[in-house]
Image (cartoon, rainbow, N blue to C red):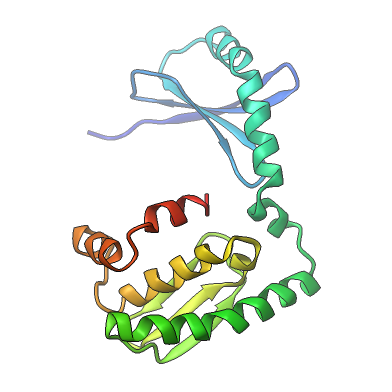
Length: 186
């Protein structure tokens, strides 16, 4: 069965709202980083009036989410100068080798190459075939335990390639609080 979806822009008072009509039963609202875009997924046939009322009822929540997102490190990173990015890179490059050295014997792995990039959508990446691990320099904006979590996460990929149960089990066995650390990156 083909998935039909229609999207349109609606203005509710001073808010720009993107409405996606889907084959679903309930209306869902999201405020998407980094710019606070408002998206509503709603059942096909929902009236503009119903959408406007829904948005008005959620106005306070929308404003709160936008404030939180604007204050988040990722939002700050979107406006960073090249000098700031260089400073983040210096911090991350200073910390990561020691973390890798500490965790490699615990996991029984060896990273061959460490790289650092300013990435918008990933905290890190691993190429198990080459042993290359890349770490996002934006992690300098987060608590140190977040950087350690990403390093361990990528080192674990040298042993387990996907994000299935085996990977989660490995992460839990070596870093029992990894869920809490990961949550701080949202």
